[in-house]
Length: 543
Image (cartoon, rainbow, N blue to C red):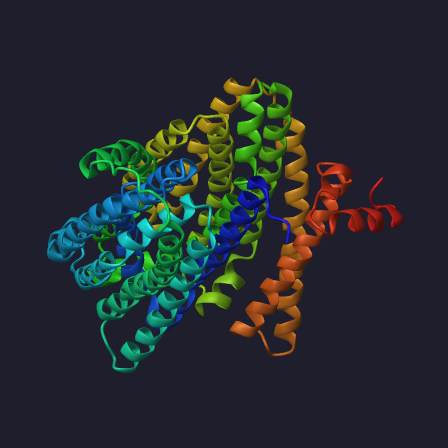
């Protein structure tokens, strides 16, 4: 069998890891739906209050070490120093495990204080059960970094999918048991957050299996070789931390903007007259639309990775025109994706809400949250483009600014508008962050964005799509009502899915008619591109 080139090996690894990320994030996002269905809006609200805080502590506990580990391991393997690569893992995993335990203990014993800062005592138990994940997650992350440094992405991919599957399975099992025993909303939410610890254990066990196999294979290969002198552990750890801490600082931006709602929405709702339990129910309703927006952002993040290496190469070679062309194409495509997702979710909010969450509570809020999709999609792609050109810090700073803006707008809007105010604040904050990224992109690349391609034509396309989806929704609802089938989840599902399908078809047709998508771009679609172009040309849709 022909040995793969380094480039082909890297591409294959990236494909495997990207697929695993998509699958694991899809599972992680969609698990919120059964959580609300089984546990109710109260438990759903408590879970969504605690999880962003847990995510922030995980980011602090791992302090960018997985990325640093992969770099230092790769450097030592390039120098044929396998023992040095294992030293990197040994030093960093010991350190990250200790930091994880400290963070976990701090989260467990500090749970009452954290709950008082959140201003809701119902979150205490969920915070404590989530802290158990720190027994497993840091070491799992270190082992993932080690294998990524060896350009072996399969262990990380299998571990990620296993972690999410175990997490969801344990969560649903505990939800069913706790609801059957008439447990409180706080206990049900604690059962859901304990899934993170169970998932971490499952992912860690997978990584340990791969590590044991790798260790035995490496030891057999190294028996005949002369070992190099080991570097002092404290010096090695210092080098790793110097590289890792800035990465951690950049990674904090996204958890922080998600954490703003945790510390402001429940408190502001209580100040507006809601009880603690009522505030958690409202916060649960507020979070109904967020998993749907996260699916769009996840798709954008997965696709945006394609642009980073291409832009890095073009930037290195000084190919300014190529950089402009790729940047314009990426911005145009992702702007259309974000707009379409926002308009579709806003139009079909009520049937989608009933289909997924059993009732139409918070439909107006879901409509406002829908517009977050456009902003967050543009934040994702513009950040990826800037990173590809070597501007890694600016997007993180812009997101931190968005977090401050979100806090201010929450304080201004929630007292008068409730959870809809928080949704509007989110949409505005992401839009502002995206705007700053795009302004920097224009300054760096010198590109000019045509109004026809980013305002007029997109408005026509999305308008036609929204009108068609709305018409299908109205007609379907009327037909079902005439047949005595209107009002249930099945009717809402039918109304939603038909609206989505027809809207997608109209969106695609309008893309072609307005020539915002060209024949050359269609032909680049994997596998189906060339045959699709031929069929559209035969039907005289595409010329």
